[in-house]
Amino acid sequence: MLPRWNLSRVYPGLESDEFRAAFERVTAGIAELRAEFDRRAIRRGDDARVDSGVAATFDALLARQNALAEDVRTLSAYIRSFVSTDSREDAAQARESELQQHLVELRKLGTRFEAWIGSLDVETLIERSASARAHAFPLRTAARAAQHQMSEPEEDLAATLAPSSGTAWAKLHGNVASRLVVPVVFAPGVGGERAGTTVPLPMSAVRALAHDPSAGVRRAAYEAELAGWERAAVPLAAALNGIKAEVHTLNQRRGWPDDLEPALFANNVDRATLGAMHEACRESLPDFRRYLRAKARRLGRERLPWWDLFAPVGGDGADASWSWENAAAFVVEQFGTYSPRLAELPRRALRERWIDAEPREGKRDGAFCMGVRTDESAVFLNFSPSFGGGSTLAHELGHAYHNGILARRTSWQRNTPMALAETASIFCETIVANAALRTARAAERLAILEHQLQGSCQIVVDIHSRFLFESRVFEGRARRELSVAELNALMLDAQRETYGDGLDPHALHPYMWAMKSHYYSTARSFYNWPYTFGLLFGLGLYARYREDADRFRAGYDDLLSSTGLEPAADLAARFGIAVRSPAFWRASLDVVREQIAEFERLTTP
Image 1 (tube, one colour):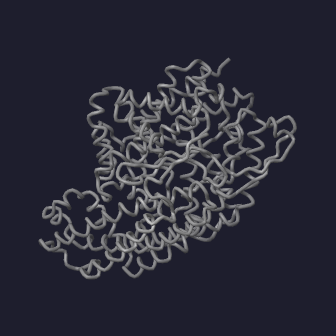
Image 2: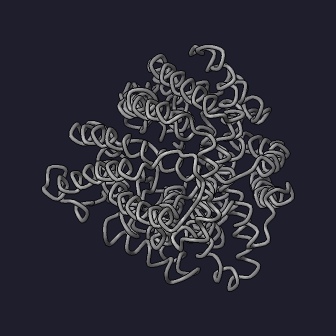
Image 3: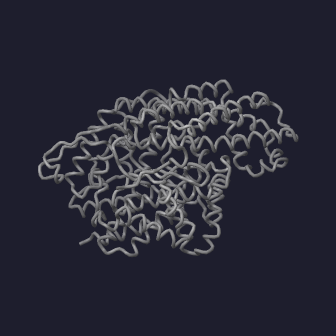
């Protein structure tokens, strides 16, 4: 039995008095905040002067918003814990929809507060207010964001329409994808007890078969998956078209130069940094193709078809050493090699039942970690008994560690961009992977290397294909709606451009746009490249840790606590990292190149 999380420590249930009281406290808090904004005329003004009264108003309103944000975070996480583990939970779906309506009002107030800040002399405010000084970076960021606001009525209308436009399309994607059940046709002699039968499986289970040791099972799952996405493609294409059109229109009205710029701004990353990273990634594509060709040879193929991308090599590690109990114990042990504080985190997560690890029907695919309250998190997994399952556990617990470090910060100070949100998770995952490599036998070593290279290939090669795809979707959608066939063609073009001769060009995945939920967000367009940033930045930090562990430990937690308080380039500079130079990104990719070279050595007869 794999663990399911227990959030009854937060509220006893969706129908409990405690939950209802918390819900009412949030909705009342939003109404009271609106009344206070109206009373104080908090909106864009034409008087930039900051006197003691203005400073006091800022202090009071910021404190109220930070407190309200804490209540919202806990309430949202609690409801999401039901929706993500059982899409058929109608009561949770209803509560989520109801909460979203109230959060629209809160976002409107946030927009007004941002506009008010943008009309003030922010530097004088920082001089006059201790609270403003403690929030100097998010305050300056808000002032810059205010320059990209529409008029207040337009912003109000955009926020009001969001639940029935972009948010509704995103919800449609989540519900369709999580409820999609597809028939998998197992040929005679393939699939063990399922051989010669057709078995309906939820899409998350079908995708999990991509890791099966049997090539026949993997191909059957791939064909079933494509057929399943094809059946769902029309509504999902409508959702994607609707979301991208809305985002593009709003970006234009808000004065952004293009659709990428808001994502750079939100991640505290400049174009020079992104350009340097992408330059190094493009240079590495031939190396990843070497890995894919080596894997193809190992599997007895000339070219690797898509269904073999995740094929286990050197054994899948699915033995007792990577059972849930052993994987969890190994993570605790290896976290302890870094610090007692890091080791205590998984112990506490297990003890307090923060983790939901069991795959089941109605549960969404993938893995994530969400902050719940103070230093508590909830970790969502679909665990498989393999090194990959243990590695994912370490990754998500890294997010939980980061959440704990951020607990002493206010909500405004904790606003970590995606590009830096992967820092602790990649670092923790690397600790566990390197420890596993040190103790592995030859076949196990190959399996672990394969898992690492699978992940790196996805985060560098596949994510670059997603970046190209999303860029071209925005370009095309600016002119007109894109058909299912056109979306498929754009996806295949991006995959051929990045994977090159590493894959069989006739066996790719045209429906990746339908599968990846990241495309279906109005708030997080270009959600892809921050993962590449996170991987390579995390590897760079791990290299610094290996060079001088004591010095690294002395500054690492402070860096994690400051991820919402400085630009990425400034945080990186603390450890002597120059992210605007391709040299840093090349050095991180050199770690991957070494793994590819060893993989080639171990797979050469």
